[in-house]
Image (cartoon, rainbow, N blue to C red):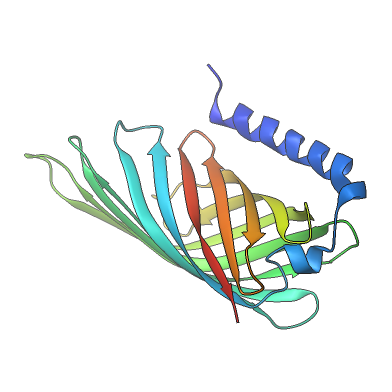
Length: 210
């Protein structure tokens, strides 16, 4: 059976190979990607949890604000809910962070950091009691954005997340995404976020430059 750690490793290796092999074909990353552009967005989320039978769904809001030629400020709010036979789970997270990047001719490497707060509300069948869990969160990551054409770019980021609360487990995740600008102001973005031995989240949504 392929574990999530093996899946993350294979995806990271594939991303590195892709970046190396596609650099000669890359276009202008400043016009194709999302980094370095002021935009807001909204996503639909669908999550497959490894340790429970039920899946989750929800949504997210995000913004990106460049403050210099190499730094973007970011913010997001996400909501995920599981309504199942074994339990009901509501998870909300708000984060604020920054992305440091260097736009090269053929790709854009970057590092990211964020802090935030998360709320988890669990509801178990009787006679078990309800339970709440909340914590400050932090995240650090690094990745690369690679243009595929003058309107389309792919990205990948490997990140580490943890919380200040002892009940919050640390995790390593890999996000792979692609975006396409239909106009100068409107783009579609799709991604998959894989967390080791925990979950796989698919998200699709729109980005609006302004």
